[in-house]
Length: 340
Image 1: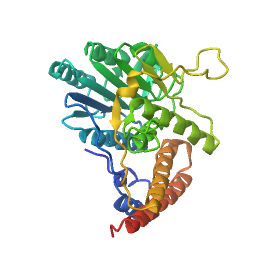
Image 2: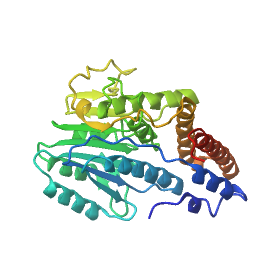
Image 3: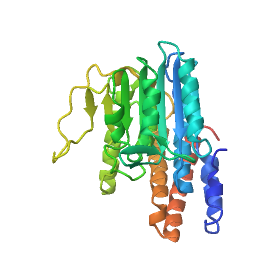
């Protein structure tokens, strides 16, 4: 059952806060997701896991639902969204087996991991109900695909080691962090979702957003977000392309990230996520306000990740201010677009 935000705050929220939350949710406009030019034999698996805190899980569910909606708009694509809060490792492995058995020789597979993970004794562990899903489990699934093209996006903490473990021909591995030591819940996936409908991400202006373009857009946005906040950057996304080229890597002993290799001819450049909408909004002002809304929504996601570190009163005061701003933006956009 999808998480309802009002339920998350019922016990702790201050008097009057619920009305503000309901207003923001009522006015929140659903972003227009572009159709994704996928082949009919493309399969997408989205797994979201445990969050530890309700606010974390709300972010993970929201992002996984955004991915599901985007891929469902692809023509004849198979989309499987698995809820790791209720499904166990054996259930997920069974889905892996069923998907593999149903593939055509030219099928392509996308796999997204959305949630919290850690590394124990050099083993990546994606947190779900019961025993965790491991890096070895994911490797077994990907290896079972044979020579089919596969794209893994591990949008979790401590995911960087998967690039080394899972890099292989006909495979692209994107991780939200560059090492197992980046343990803070990453915001990377929020930027990737933004790229799906962003003309800015379409750097070659071919009307499509490739996985490479999405990665580069999201990586730059992550760095800029932390810089703008004056905060230490605690996540550094990686992209491994067929175990030949790795972007975003800082090797041991290097004081700074080295110049990256050429991105020409990468498999990630021909794997497409979306076509950016050219006319999502009728007015320039509405488009500008929509960009502001994306920023406010990301502020809310970031704040939820900080809840355990803040006094309750301060947390809800900041959240209320953001929700009011979100409601105001949604109201103004609706007015400009003639929706009211």
